[in-house]
Length: 253
Image 1 (cartoon, rainbow, N blue to C red):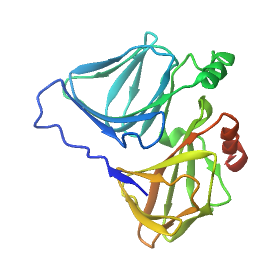
Image 2 (cartoon, one colour; image 1 turned 180 degrees about the vertical axis):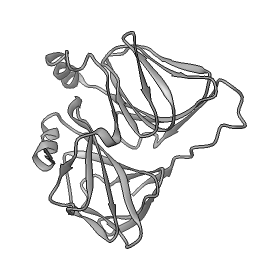
Image 3 (cartoon, rainbow, N blue to C red; image 1 turned 120 degrees about the vertical axis):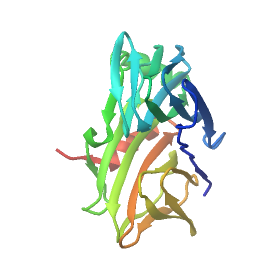
């Protein structure tokens, strides 16, 4: 299992309008570009339009305003923002504010673009949620005390879904496998759990990215007094394969 630590550095000693970019897991998942962006206001980042990719932002720390389609949206720590398809957007950071976020850029193939055009209305607006406001779900491999949230449901971005899992030890995410997708984990605050894949073990901690080997049998264990808290990022090989989401994850009323 490949891992990489995301270093979120304090910006107190940096000058105003400072911007830092750090690519994460270069080339680890085909068609996926992940970047940690840290900003010391006042400044902004401008992103141009493109029909070749979709951007999803994960806010990790700080405050910002997202401007898209003439409207502003405030985001703070632990927000997800799926930007509107093929529309420019700005990330504004005010004077005195700092903002750290992951930009997940998912490339689109011809089938993806055709799927978007068939439902263009839903792809023409921004989707923004605090993690805690995202819908919850249950799954057979997880215990009843686990808190599971669907951060990026099926269809929001073709062949890309995200969710979170949180529980206290002792607990277990049961062994399973999925041959239709590539999967990354991102450790949230105070996370300390053990990921097991085909016998290999790695400890997942806060701000660590871990790649579950494709097609492996894997599970996650958390010991007593430890916390399991991570985001899973699923990148499907085909549009047909993403039906796995609603088949395995049952929404709670």
